[in-house]
Length: 94
Image 1 (cartoon, rainbow, N blue to C red):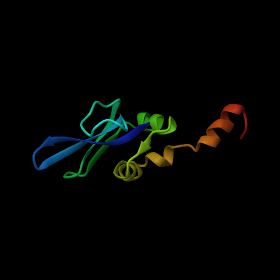
Image 2 (image 1 turned 180 degrees about the horizontal axis):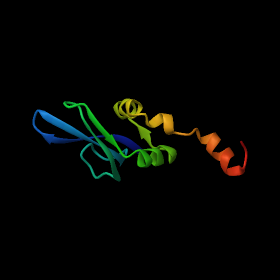
Image 3 (image 1 turned 135 degrees about the vertical axis):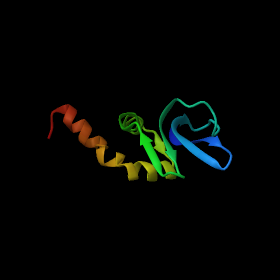
Image 4 (image 1 turned 120 degrees about the vertical axis):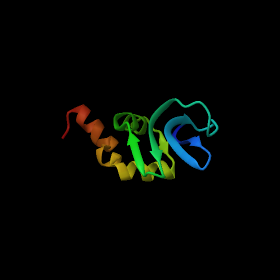
């Protein structure tokens, strides 16, 4: 199973986090499948590659609580189409 979670970077007392798609069994600093953004809590900067985040969410990736809050703040979930509407659109409904 894949999760979207934070990976700590930066120097001592100056943490910066990468938002990565990573296997659940991997450690925090383990090898990521893909980096989808970064979060700087000190300067309150957020950068997300929204199409990539949406792709992983539609494939079943689960965001951690913090990544969920960051994504919600960035407006990612407003662009996420419910899966049943996606299937209906493909079948020609709606």
